Image (tube, rainbow, N blue to C red; front, side, top):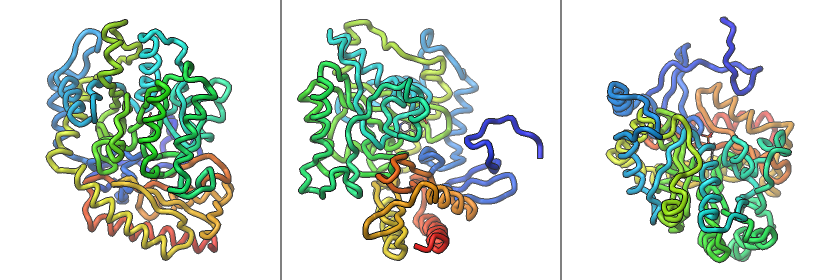
Length: 445
Ligand code: PLP
């Protein structure tokens, strides 16, 4: 085999080379078929090989692929911003386009700080967040992330932002049950803000449904209403990181819509272009834009490829395609069907401790003992075992790692394209069942 100089995630592992994709399937150069049960990294939400998107990108490429955002605007960027305004809740009307989810959350952090500067309150610079969260890999985004594993090497360079416990009912950090707990996990934000001082805090950031560091952890009802009230009480902005959950993934346009709460800023990525081009966005409310408009008139961030015509053409085509095919609405029913099937597996395989999710973002958590929910030790690395075995059998699932030894379990995300059909869900489940059965037998659970 020819030597490779491509830096891949793990340098000691072999990766198949992808040849092409169609719908929920990917094929490698040897012709092996994979069910894309995770939409890659919860990204390819309309499926692979959709010609409408390729054609929209080709048409834009034939006109102009790049203009610099300080010199020109472009039709697809304008149209996509307008479409997102229609999709977003409340007065979240403005879009700042970037290239990755990390840039979107990092821009959100900067906008929140800038907002308070424009309002004459420059001491408000901290962004509180939760343990068991992932907001991105760049240093600002990582500072906000409570993902211990991804933080640990860079701790000296990071701000110490994560401060509150996650709403993780399966392993409640307060050892309570809902609703008797009276949402202690949300109320902790109030205490955290008081400890730091609300004059220091610009914003609170949270994933409406926890993704990469927890596998589709859905908060209890009332949680976000309480969070919004606490933020308002202390004059703190609420940033919803919808990089994974947004653009229909969870059966609503934005996952936060389930709780009728309107954030001040929303970060988007992944499903925004469904993987057809690097594209992400920081969406900002009228309220936040107003003092910037009348103040410095410029958002102190931006990239060479921000609002790139080629990428925004892809994003616009994706949103149009989703509307035409009613993919968001369809994700609720398909998600229930998938969750029901996973719950049947849970009844039959004691290695499955919890099944959760909303729409087509679902998670499966593994335990060594179903009664006391004991997680496996990290040496066993069950998540890796499941992901590897699934891949051998032609099924892609996404590893979710909280990096909190003893506090959270091994888990995988199952999040196929929203375009998946009923019989394809059956096929996905049947392969996943074989994987679970074999791992359970191996580990003698
Ligand atoms: N925010 C959330 C909720 C994510 O899940 C991710 C990626 O997994 C990011 C931000 C970072 O996005 P990206 O990998 O595109 O930089």
